[in-house]
Amino acid sequence: MTILKNNKFIKKLTKDKIVFISMIILVLLYLSIAFAGFIAPYSKSFSDRRLSYAPPSKIFVINGQGKLSRPYTYNYKRTFDPENFKINFEMDRSQKYYLKFFSSGDEYKIFGFIPCNIHLMKVDSPGRLFLFGTDINGRDVFSRLFYGGQISLTIGFLALFISFPIGLLYGGIAGYFGGITDNIMMRIAEAIMSIPSFYLLISLAAILPANMTSIQRFALITIILALIGWAGFSRVVRGMVLSIKNQEFVEASKAIGASSLRIITRHILPQTASFVIVAITLSVPGYILAESGLSFLGLGIQQPDASWGNMLKEAQEYINVLYRPWLLTPGFLIFIAVLTFNIVGDAVRDILDPKSHARR
Image 1 (tube, helix red, strand yellow):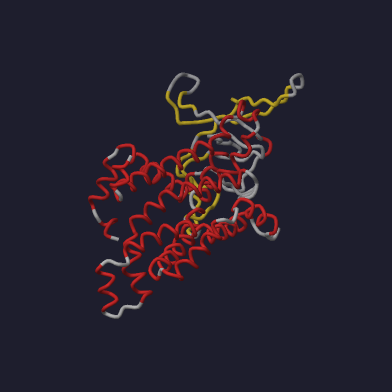
Image 2: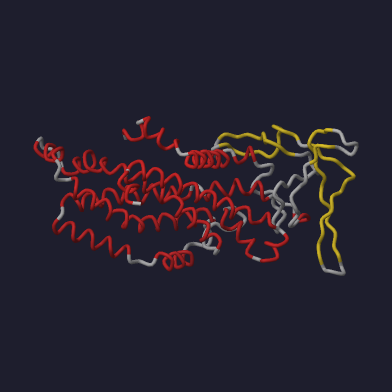
């Protein structure tokens, strides 16, 4: 992969300020979900139902005497207005709770296997720190954003790791052999492309075992959809292989007795690397949106597990949009992630295929 080793490629990619900022945002997003347990004040299972829909905690750095102070917050006290049938939250100023940085708390595992209990910031119990408020079950939205991002930003790669190798090899074989082999393989690919994936997904969601966890359930659905999604990719690869297979280096490989499989995998398919890189960067946003949409509809990750899609589902009620805008935060993160991926993917396409840039 000389493309990735070429410093000129990196320099061109970072030359545009918007692309460079997008890359930084993506790096920060993936670092934040990698260290979600450290950044999040609370664990995945934390819930305080007494503080359902509590607003974001206010952080104070100036005390009552007007002097600088260590950052602190107050707990919220829940009250009920019988005249308007409305629940209100008021700050209980009787007790300050100071923010503690790099302090021990709930145990978690970094990268899934390194035990740790140090958190970036927290407050001592019975204090509560809700930077982005809480949901209907009294769960910290700020903490769940990081745990939900672990699914929303990574589960799409599972489909890519399945669909792209299949599409590459299938399209490479069809394009290399041509003739009746090509016709039969492409008709099969077209038949697979004609399967309505949305209705298939609904059917799968209905017949999958009920005792599966939501993560296992959605991972299985993603794998099945990936086994269907490779068909369109293979058609493009097949077209590229048709134009490559008659070049001199392929004829030289045949002359020295290299097998067809070796020629395809070692000599022809690496020539499609530019297209594969572009396709990956442009496909990830689609999977992010797919996961968010499916979880929003209740077909993907389900409560109590978090994903940006099922977190955003709570904001579909206009009352929550008007009075609890912090519930819209997952939607903003989905927008940022998809936008930055598209910007970077578009820049990669322009660099690796200058002709596409000239045509626009």
